[in-house]
Length: 512
Image 1: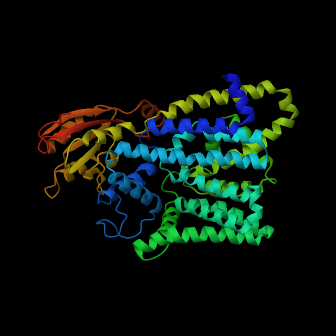
Image 2 (image 1 turned 180 degrees about the vertical axis):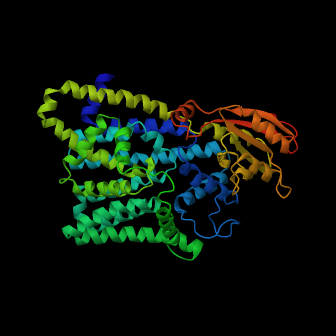
Image 3 (image 1 turned 45 degrees about the vertical axis):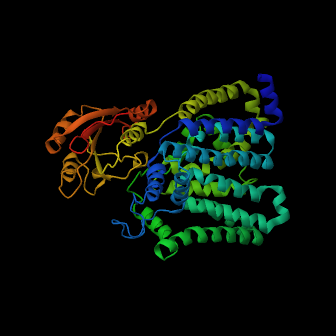
């Protein structure tokens, strides 16, 4: 078996690479439930799920009670999920976990384009050896399968970028210049519709064509990209607001105004992020390789570097923002490092050091790959809502937190859209939430969810002063990885959820 695998790796590495990519993405689609970051659930799934039920969870739509105009959110990606959920409801699939398996499966399958075309691009630029390394990294780099099944626009835009690059790099494209570059522009435009910042890629390519005076390529690509962004982004905004691009302009205004309001980190933060994600010392090898042949592959290098520099210059830095450039960094890093090692006297003399470095990388990467592929993220909050979904017609709930920072609960898994009093404006501390919960103008909450790691009984005693019929129902524990991440950084509030039922609303515990 091992000899057959080695033979396959030498002669047809793409088959093995795609097999591994398919395997781990399929496993992630099954086991990597929950969500990773706030945006990939509450911006996408909660919005689309509520729309299919006739609600507007985030109050984005005109006519919603708390909507006062464009909020700067892109309707395109949640809108695609809205149509998917509508179709799944139509065929009778109402289980939220079943729907999310379909969502993860589609995203995982779509991400295979990145692996396949990444290999083909490197093979076209440099040959099979460096393509094999790039393809393998794209297939089984520890976070790739897990991230690929998440609802992150930063990941979903990558296959469009990769496909656009393939069209302008492949040798056959020179025979049909205008058509190939036009389609590439359409693909880049689709990426921009998902993540506006990816416009830096076609912008960078356009600058290169401008200085090289490649007018046909520039015109074709620009036309395709502009048409696609105008049709989708402009068209959606015009449909909802009567003004094209109003959401996009609001998005940039909000981001510029709030550039210091979120995670403000130093300029070198994304360098450290990439070094950490790609595991040193191999990440440092790839950094060297990325810069080594920048002139030969300037069409890939410059837009990627431009994306990196612009994001590094902006104060608000979150790890996910840099994700769209990482596959292209891997492509050029693999090309540069493979060629360097083949002729470097130092590495030819120190092949054991190279073997140990890569051995360390693959051992650690494999451990992380297996762990994350099977990680159920935000398990406590998801399972808490799944547990409550057995109750019908829940009018209201509230979440009380030991640190007066209550978490938002994913109502998509509840399959109902009750009021959440902890999400009301000004409702952050326990006292304020309880006052809202007992306001005669509001329906009494059917359940109170207490979150914390310490003794929650003081909170329970205080809550019973307002809601005397609270009884303990059950406890939902976070997953192992959630507990570990919370231990590493307590800002990740992956804590136990203690569910208490209000007997004044639901007299009896639901029986299985």
